[in-house]
Image (cartoon, rainbow, N blue to C red; front, top):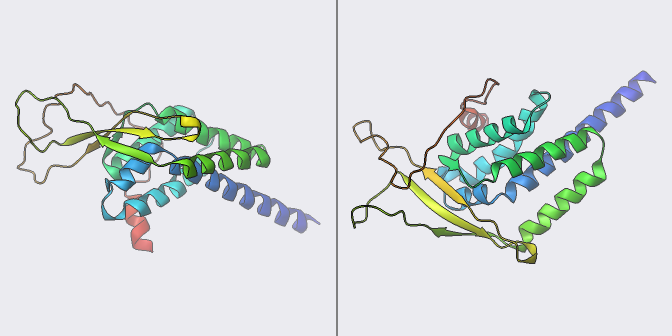
Length: 214
């Protein structure tokens, strides 16, 4: 009898984890910032694979850390975008994405399967309704000449259901070509990027390890 109960519990845990993974995928795949990074190859030749890997990384992050707070999830997502796509998320979407993922995790833990599936269906419908459009934004400079900047600002408008739209700024931070190249150029647009270091374990070089294991 105990063995049967144990098997049922293990099956329930596995199903809950799988459902949460579906929820994370739905949230990330409808995140305009990640979509822009993938569509424009900010993560290199493996941008699409990195986006898929992010789903597993976020899912594992929740299962490896108990009582996660929303700001911790925001930091983790920000680190993933910065490390894997050289992209600084500064459009205000991080709190929304983190909140959705946290909510789905809590609902999965509470056994609210119907609610989670409903949220997933809504997100999938939103994804099918339209893709984010990317329009380059020119940064004003003192000199009237074209130059290669270390940062490219992009304004994104997402055509969602009911004519809703999402706008913001995504900054792609490319690494300098060599050590002799000048450091980060002075930011004409006045952006100041502040990063907070997390105390919890981050999957350092996880993408490289993931590729080697395949």
